[in-house]
Amino acid sequence: MAINFDTLKASEDNLRKMFLRFYNHVLQSQDYLYKKFQVSKKLTPLQYAHIITNEKKANKMEAQILDETSWIISKDMPRAAHLRYLIAIIRSIKDLERMADFVERVATTLQNQKEIDNNIHRAICRLMKGSYEFSKEIYRNIHSGAHQTRSYYLNRATTMFYDFSAKYRACFKEIGEKIFRSKKDIKTKIAIFTAIKHIERNADHAFNILENFMYIKEPNFYFGKESRKR
Image (cartoon, rainbow, N blue to C red; front, side, top):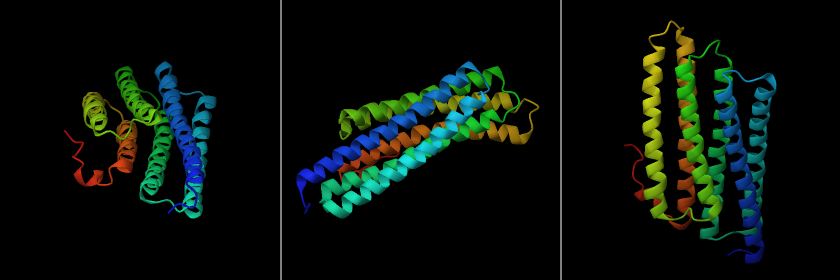
């Protein structure tokens, strides 16, 4: 049993604020890269440095939240429902950390390309936008406190994720058809495909976060979860 419910509630409220700040920071990083890359195929040194700084800040935010969560568990001894909340946070900050990593990796990969075809550039921008919009949708839902409804998960989030996945497959095919006809070396081709895979993974990690929060009120959620693949 928790030592003091009021203390535990205050701790969870503070942890929630820290988590939402972390998520918002990752979203801002995604949006920043998308908007800068949309305008120009190359980032300025200052813009690229900004993305690197954001990734380092994300690592610190993850560490701070993990430390705070460990402290809450040790001092408040939460019961099952509260403990599931803390577990959801711990799982989700790893997803956010990976999302921040992917933003930096996409920026680095694209920055190292000598030249990017206009059609490929536009396709990557569309994919960046779709990934960001899906990630933001999950953030808004968690921020609103309505994240623990199976109806939202099945009808809204899953539908959006399937739509994004379809766009990703179309983008992958479009870029594949274009790049394999080009004279670019194999390393360049692999780099571009790796970049778009990182963008797709961002949306996948955002979906992971929603599922982590579904677990709070539905402990058996993962046992009955259907595959996302379609």
